[in-house]
Length: 322
Image 1 (cartoon, rainbow, N blue to C red):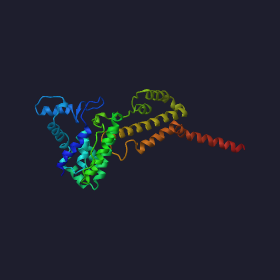
Image 2: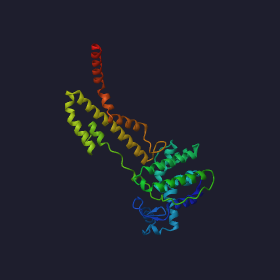
Image 3: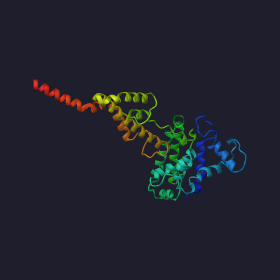
Image 4: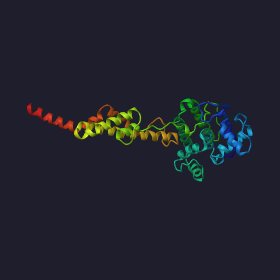
């Protein structure tokens, strides 16, 4: 396949990685040319040599780490030109398993397990449009980055890095050398442990009585619901208010679940087309429903049968006296 592509792929990855860095927000910590101190320690330990600063990594060690840790892990020698560079580049930045998952999600016809086996290789061979395949993979990679807590810190460098990877694989896929990359500052490690926390459902559970809510909104909803609940049987107005609270809680719960699903999907292999900034249609619909309740429309709908009856009675009286 493309065994000869390791050297040019590595040379381009090293440009993106730069030299030594130890940014306080980078989960990789002390890093030299993309190799973290943790990885370097493990590498030297396996070779039964003493640990030392990653700043002292030599060229032979660097080549060996990249081949073993990333290229071989994604079976770079067996991947098609262009696909190999895209998967390898993702592995260097976010780990081999995560990068392979992006590829498998983009393929859409194989099990997403983060491991390249015969089924994944065969699916790549069968794919009719490798440009579209890699573009979909890079969309997922960018969405993953956008879902990380440290995205605001490294967004400029990461975005530029992904854009350069796209330009290079497009050239490789057509047999061209492609443009030379430049250092963009996107060398911070982007790992799943940096995913943003998922939204909670405390307020929704408080409104529906489906758990113990936490926080000021949840506490307020729970207190109101518990106070009104015993009175609901004796007053249709109070019953309507309790019903409205429960329905709002259901909508909040559904909204929280769907937003959490979107966030989890973005953080670990986004499984949707397009940008992560767009919520699903269901989420948007629940936003609309919730807005209607805030404006009072929901409560009016709940009480509407009684009000319509009153309007009919009043209308009949008016017509009778007119």
